[in-house]
Image (cartoon, rainbow, N blue to C red; front, side):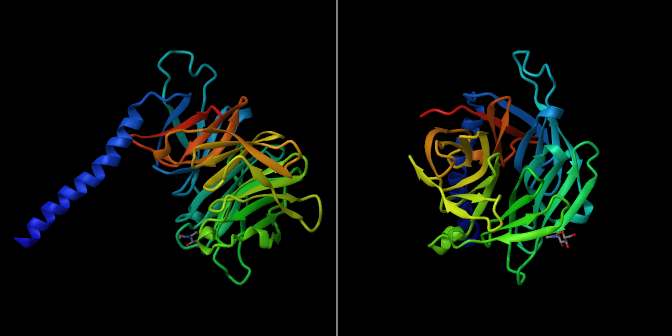
Length: 331
Ligand SMILES: *[C@@H]1O[C@H](CO)[C@@H](O)[C@H](O)[C@H]1NC(C)=O
């Protein structure tokens, strides 16, 4: 008897607690989005990263359950008033990596390949960088990212420089793995600046990373919001903290360059736009974009000069639907 009373109350309470966010989510989902959205049907609920592949007119997305999908965008898409929902097709499902997540991805255009950061998100025991041919989807290399001393690690995101070296951020132990164009591990980049003073701000550390055409990396530390400039033209990989004015970058996740002087930070808020007029010694937050927060923005990409944000959560039943939302920045 006590049990059933209790469970009725629990049920009621559960209903109240869950009804509020559910109502909020439904109303957010039904509201007409203020900016352009590419919707696509997907085989999974969780998509970590999306990058536009301009030569092949498709978005490439990484699966948290492991794998890569492509979402082709036909030339005439959007020409009718009711825009069709696009379709995700799985192009990589690597059985050797089952149980691991595919996270950050980057198109390495000169070498016609996709680089993928792979990690066992819950265990932090297996981390790797994989390269796949963009035409055949054959795996070109798989490099295990380990140590030193088997420290826990979380390969989160990846960038590629002009020579084809890849740089993978470790969000757990705050280092960067450098991997050569041939897939051979080269070195670790470590620096005391990578570690936040407060221990809890290191729970998610180095994350989004981009390569700037002038020969340096820009990297964000998610929980502290610190932003770094790392010179990769010099052997010692000099690390500097970028002075950021105009607002905090805390909870910044994926990065993308919109131009050599403009950087997009995806996360919470959905999008922040940074500008630097001194080659990224200093920068300012010049504008923001508020998208569907309940879907969790995690990565940015640029399509024909417009910024699109990937959102982790898909919605809908039985067909899961994801949203790539255009970020239109305002002050
Ligand atoms: C990740 O992949 C590696 C390599 O095949 C495998 O040994 C490991 O068990 C996988 N991790 C999980 C959590 O399944």
